[in-house]
Length: 397
Image 1 (cartoon, rainbow, N blue to C red):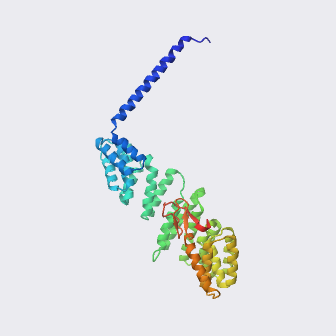
Image 2 (cartoon, one colour):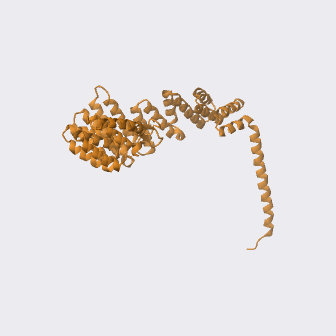
Image 3 (tube, rainbow, N blue to C red):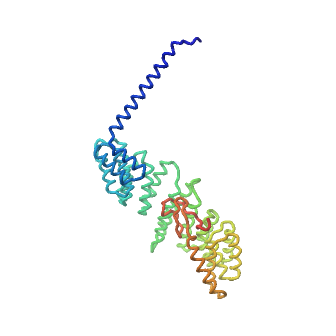
């Protein structure tokens, strides 16, 4: 194939066309930027420096000059909300929704932002309404479901929480373990009443069990442990000691890492049915595989009532294998309560010294946000996530 040299004339032509096009783009960008007021760039600069107060002031000036700038108004509303000026944020987003010419996608955005304003202001009924209105827009549906669930969790409206979560499950086409917790919350609310409705509890429990079985691979030990503990409480209400013990034992077998949560109740049940020695051996075996402060304390308390010397030997052996200041503190406290008089004065001094240092170790921690509490929570009070509290106390981790 012969090369035609006259093709070379197109090279400088293409070069000139490219250069000319870039000049047009640059000129257009300069024209657009020159149309923006200086306050806009000042606002951006303050925003980059995280000086939100001065950024808001600058953007307010721009908004006064151009009342049709939707994106700027949305940004202003978010900044107002972040700074805690919820009233101003609500007014900004309401003014956007009052525009008759606002495109549908911007209406959806403004509505979702307004819902967040109401939520942060504690106006949960209005937040619920706006989040429901946002469900129809695909971009805001999932965060709206999440916020709706949070509204129902705060108000303990577990029936609506279940209904909403089922809608979310259908949308995602997968089961979510939180639904079991919701049913358990309803049951525990009923159990706290002076006269619990047994038939109602049994009906709710049936739904909880069905949802648990539907979880399949989405299940986790936390959900399994919670359901067994709730079933044990129901059996206790019905005075069915055997069934109550069975459900507590299932925690040891099906969610062994949560054994510390049921060790005390299980030991009390077995003691009441003259099975204390069997309960001790069972928990001792479990402690060897899944050591925890709670199980150690239960075992030591059992032994110290039988033989203080055996209890001391057990503590020596256990604390050598699994050193624990908190365990030592609890052992000393239990030993002193047993009525043994030998070396009491020195032990009281030692126990007080250790207790002051071990108090900070007697906490559970959320694996998501780091929130700490002396009580175990199925839902973290800090970040509101379910199943994130570690089953071990700080010192055991």
